[in-house]
Image 1: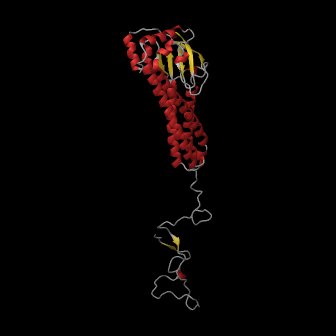
Image 2 (image 1 turned 60 degrees about the vertical axis):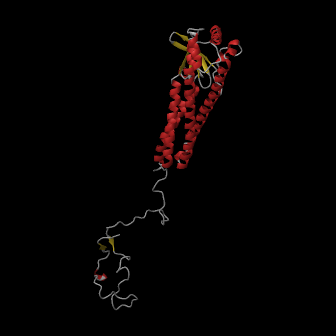
Image 3 (image 1 turned 45 degrees about the vertical axis):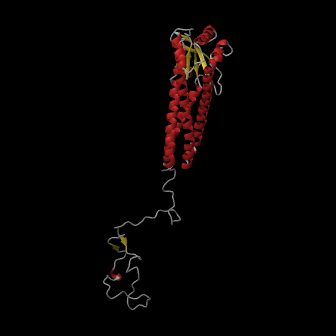
Length: 341
């Protein structure tokens, strides 16, 4: 297969790599621009506090919800006090969307939502509700106890790993596109690109799994406790579709890069020199059962030239018992019936 064939073989994984990069970029751009309606729909978790109230359920139901969330050092009275502080805070928005680099806040009017502002993008971002809601230095914040602080510490560490994984996946995918140019020339280029592609796929998969699992746990556990006070916790759909599409495209690209390593050679089969032929011409082997002239390689005429008697020659005459037709009566360039191998 020549250069044109190899370029066609490289085209498929190259397009898949670019598609994976676009999906990763979309994940990173979520919750970074308040004026973009498309980017506003890219969020991991939404915290709706528009209907927050001190208590709408019984004490037993709230205690069970806290226990399910793994919070045992906080009493219902302490949590109710914290909710009242949030409820009385006039500067809070109706809802908050959590992204990779920051968060956005907005207002709810009927069934419509409107993003009012977004935080400044920050590396290794994690959403801190205690600081955002003004509970960090209050009695309500202190009353939340050690369990809530441990949960926030774990959430902070996992968020840091998630950010690093997405960043490495982005860098590796960009490097994959650059190195993939050399894959057009040789299989060695495909081999290097394949190794970079494997790194990109593993970190894209790790980041997607981390974000999905972490925010699913947050919705399932903390969301249950928050629901008792009218707080709604929901997960976004668009950003998870983007991140898992990035995984699918990255996996498919890796498979095709591996395929281009062992197949689709860029060398032409007609450009190789034949062994024993300095000019590189192709020597055709004689096929069996074909006609060919009787030449020097076919005895008895080729093994010893025949000379008429009476001539002084170094070659003896043919044997007397030889029954072959004399060479003088043969036609020039006579053909033997078949050549056998």
